[in-house]
Length: 524
Image (cartoon, rainbow, N blue to C red; front, side, top):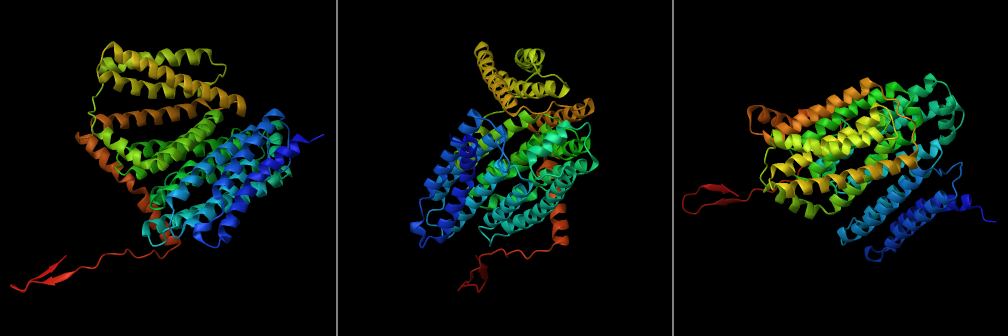
């Protein structure tokens, strides 16, 4: 009789092995034009991941070194799917580039390391893969080593990554000492069974929260994420769709521990919350599409960590998956994104009046209130998780109504609102059933803190969107355009602590011509 758990473990292990074999084969290829069938490697990895997930969900069980949890299955499918898309895109995008082979080697190394992180149940393997991802990503960030901004971004990322790895390594060491096991599921089981979390484990939770904040590029350690737009487009897609999400994945994986440590939750709220609000507003002042997307990622990572702090882990997982798919599509489709952005700038902005705001709020309440009243999940945080999309829906519908159109516009708004709410409810419910996270223990003070942040965001959005050229709007716009000069201070401090020699900016030489009539000199 076949051991289905052994087969599932073998298929999960096959995913990083395929990427690793592809990296070795690509590196050993004799000529650029005869690289091995890389597309086949990415496709086989996806097929192996699907097989592992089907077996894991059909015959659930426990493992030792390899995790059989639903979270691992979701991440494995996401990683291999994005890897398949990125691999095929990169082959065309970098065709003929002298560095194509080097790029494909490091891409497959990163994907192999991420696959190990998603499926491993061992602390040491998790840490080793975390470090391998950072080192491999550094090689891709320096794909154009003669670009000063790319070199500066890679230098800052290198320093912040080492700090995050140190925090994560210390956290895992404390967990091993406290619970006398390197297996993650056994540690979390002991956390769930204990009446209270020991002090050593609490310190470990705080250290992991610090590692997650650094990995997710939260302020003031965010500048490198904005500057890596100097790298090739597939690198940006890989970074924003996959690597930067690992901080949130760590928090979701360690949910039973994080939800018991108030210090870790408040650290996430105090750093990620203001980052999410500020980055969302800064994004509205950017013209470059890739820079705007980078600020969007910084903001979305902040909201994901805030959701983890509130105990809304199913919502954080939904956020992670949706953000990964969206950012991969947006970066790889950057040309059409630019065209769409240019068209939006030509559309006149009509400020909604009091009637439009009231009507939009009423329409949003038709979807929001029944969901809150009849939801099976209780607690202030879960109610708040339905109020926030209700606010977003209100803003969306108010702009539809301000465009005019009478009853047809109202009907269209209802259709859009219904589709928006149904999709959100289905996805949130699905991830809640699959993940089965611990019950949210967020306090009223934590929810009030996040509500205040939401209010600031809405007020700032209103000012920039509709009153940008007023005296107050102009001052706010200038401040946001400079991003509070936080990255400048961070860069100076970084270079002071660890100086780096950056490549010189190559400037075109001036061509000097001498006039034959007047003898004057002109520089072109």
